[in-house]
Image (cartoon, rainbow, N blue to C red; front, top):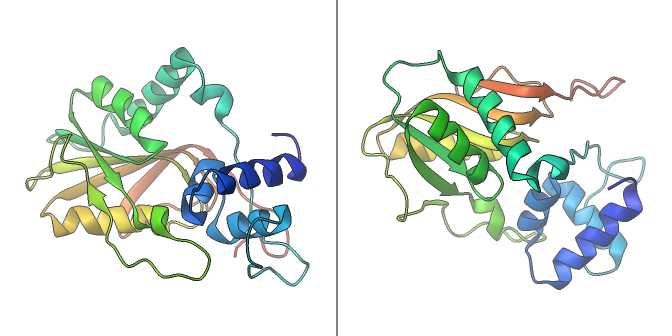
Length: 212
């Protein structure tokens, strides 16, 4: 995607396919506010909240060149695993945040010789001003927490809310999240809920709102 029009077109297509605003945000690696703004610009949604200058403050991360190629995806996941390789001796479970975090977590789990689990966050249910009414969930088709130490894997951190929710959900299951890893961190965070966060790329906005 090379410009804002491409993002608007993609948001429109995803909305017409029935995806919620939360799912669109996940697919395009943008914040909820940006996803809502893009859908509104496409003419397929209601008007969202925007910033004073007419648009949301966000950074789009397009890693589709990695995601569409299994070899590149493997090497990216292996690099993420390397970031975690010395962060906990007793970790035997890797949790991938659906959707995009799951394939990356598969490689991380293979490289670090852990079991694999996945978590579906509540943001996938979010649409416009509706509040989430259901909790996120761990898939029963994969490994369960069962009071285990674990790693958490996702593609990007935009606000940190999804990662924080996943950490909370792991704690509720009696698990212990040892470390998190992402391809790109758009906030430049060092930790979330006291759990260290590692990233291959940190995207830092420079300007008057760079620390917002």
